Image (cartoon, rainbow, N blue to C red; front, side, top):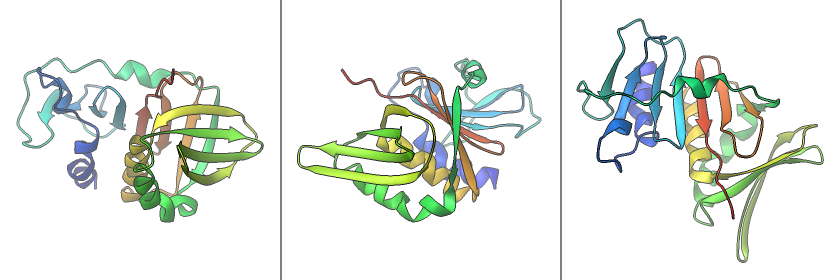
Length: 190
């Protein structure tokens, strides 16, 4: 299952825009986790291997002789609040979220008045999706394509629920289920 998920989803969490190629790798960390990042989002498989630390190219699988960015420190954040998302409630909307990226790539996750919703607006077009209910209040701007990739990954991982955790609108958001975790960096709007 792990290899299938990596084969299918690693491409959505790497970038080939850097000259040094560091962010084209799947990193097997000495702590047993596997990391895949493009510096805006991070896919983590916790307790996934018992190998020596190494990095392989996401497409070719060839060993990469690079110093992988130290991403483990990002996972130790103290989150102020969390919310459980039931996959059965959102699975049928995942493809709609992908289509909504045609409206705008940037949208808001809003927790207010007891509701948790995704909102995308651009000129005369908008997309709103009620995701669940909450007692918390929080608003964060994020890349909707990243949100789609996160949900699509968890759908393919066949999880029942995702724990969404946050602390501040400028700190990475955590989406976790079991040994899988995805961090997404919010978008700054000026």
